[in-house]
Length: 113
Image 1: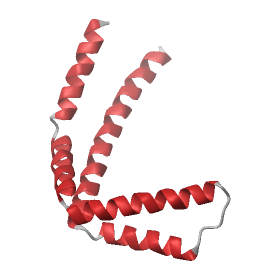
Image 2: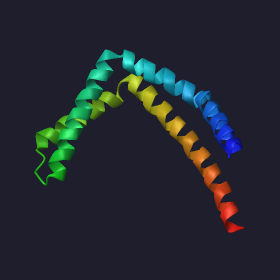
Image 3: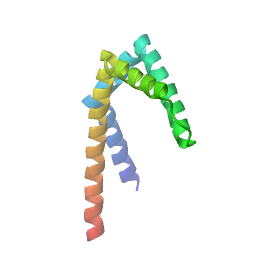
Image 4: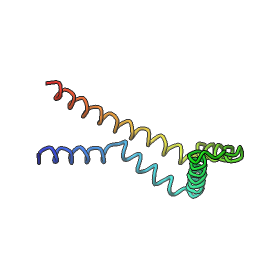
């Protein structure tokens, strides 16, 4: 069992030092340093939460609320730091999906025996 844990630690280190993780860290730092992007992101998250709570409560979502959410999203998507962060996040998630698929493939082969 100790060997499995050591291999998992090695995998964790490999992921942490991957180019995808490095690009994600750099993009996250740049996003956090961009005050306007962070302010817009916070507004978007707050407004998104409000809309979601209304929907879950079965209450009507006003057209103005939907429009505001769309405006905030469009503003975010247009910000360079957010674009780079989003792209880096997609690449990192893809790496994690590949790792998960590889593990699942090996496990399913074991279960078939």
